[in-house]
Length: 271
Image (cartoon, rainbow, N blue to C red; front, side, top):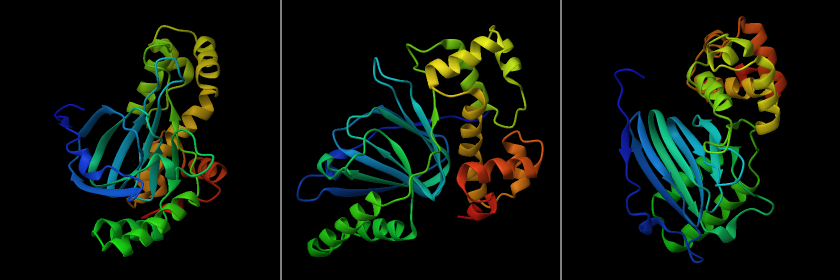
């Protein structure tokens, strides 16, 4: 965005927070200004990333031959689980109180593979805060057990936005996806986006199915939800969220939101 600069942040001393068998969950709390960026990196432990306030974007990147990357936009009520060894990077979209849980690979919940978004319950939020206060060892062990149980039973949230592989994916498809994410309020049709990248609507529609396993309409809906949720969590009106995500009316946006999330947009306002 013109006039804004990106602040690159080194990972710092992660050894201080490295989890082990004796202390399988470690908490790292940091205050991050807007436009902070963490370069792509990976580590042998799992990570749960969320912010107590503010909004961050987490991108879980693809391997050399794997599927494309996945983008998550997180308000305070959501967190992303990043599996051990997954390459990822983080952008702070608005000033955030960033919370990172480093978790030993052995405590990964059964059946969890790859990244996922979960709902941060009020209990989990309080447990993380208590764990960050460096409690005595006996209390820390109890808090860790509760944190792990709360994570394992957290409600999943299907708000991931898949992206084509940066190296092996079709560059025209990636350009369309990036354009939509940059301009979520645009009401440009698929034909319009396709023309912008020099392809036919049929070609881009086929690439969405072949490379992302979804239709453009389904992908566009996921992108809209990912942008709307942080807005609603900050207290934006439903009408404002609808306009910001390219919906012509509040009722159309509300119907889409309820069909996808199982609840009206008003249910997440101010959370």
